[in-house]
Image 1 (tube, rainbow, N blue to C red):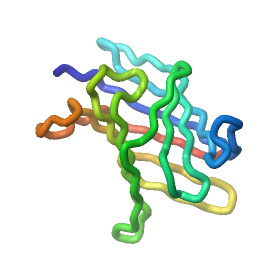
Image 2: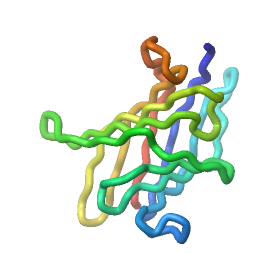
Image 3: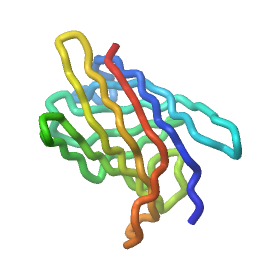
Image 4: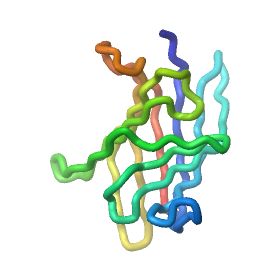
Length: 137
């Protein structure tokens, strides 16, 4: 299976959305490599307000809920992993894993890291798809 390199960049604004009142909406941009050029597109992420529940990814009016989400403290930093199957904008039968670090202050939260792709259910290794960054600023 051939994967395109995709870099996800999110700009996060904290407010509840009418369709997802228990979530905080993160508006952002996804960047992906197409040939030798970078392309961009709008992406929305809905994060559970209390850190429990499904993360929702929305692209071009289509949504998908996370298959799994977890966060932990590792070596003094907060890390997270969120996995989606058939995320909007990916080929059918593709799993997407966002894995990264988050920093939170009284004035802002910043999330950054890498994402990986593989065929759903495949025993093969995850392939690096790119990186992401999003912020509450």
